[in-house]
Structures are given as structure tokens and as C-alpha cells.
Length: 119
Image (cartoon, rainbow, N blue to C red; front, side, top):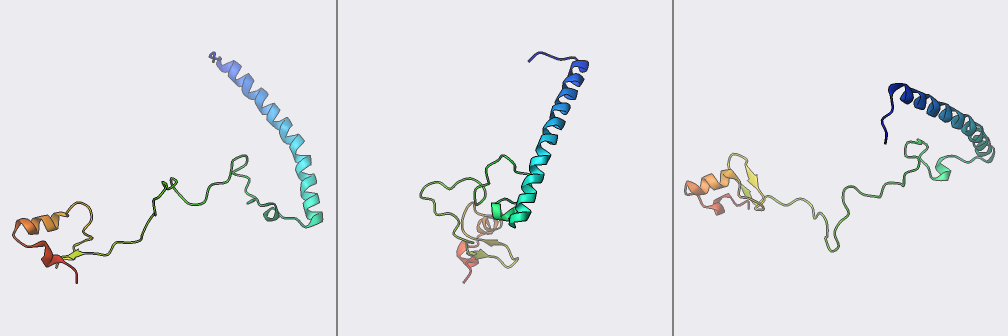
């Protein structure tokens, strides 16, 4: 794209603003007609299936759920994992993942892991 001077850019902006204003003036009578017809028939925006905010105009609705799609065969979250190990200071561990420092230090000091099992 060729570089435009500041004057050319301002002229282009002015032209686009005029085009936008013209489009808006053509749109408003149509909106007024639709509103009048909706009022006459008792139809609401909710009846049309829209939220009425106009913020998502032209975009498809968001898919249900959040984040990425699940891979085939994956069962998803199974809930919280119960605590398997606890010490007298209140430190806990489920037994999954890397061994926490407090258990590693206790094992290095000679304490057996089974002594921290929650019963």
C-alpha cells in the first residue's frame, strides 16, 4: 500500500466519515419501520432470538462451554482428588504429581511416607 501524506489521509478520513453518515441516515428510517411493526405485532427482541445489545453484530454466537474442544475419548474433569498425605503442620498432598518438598525433606530425615497417610 502506498504511503499517503497527512493531508491525503485527512481527506480520506473526511470522505469515509461522509459515507458513514450517509449510510446511517439511510439505516435509521428502516430501523424506525421495524420498531413500529414490532410494537404493532407485540414482538420483542427476545422473541427474535437476539440479546438486543448489538455488540456481537455479524459474528456467529459463541459455542457452549469454555476453552478448547475436548479430544475424542477424553472424559473430562472427574472432580477433586482426595488428600492422601498430611503432616502435623497442615501440609497436604494428593499423591499425584511431583513429591512435595515437605515429604521429600521428611523422607531424607528418615521418616517413612506411610506415616503421613490420611486414614
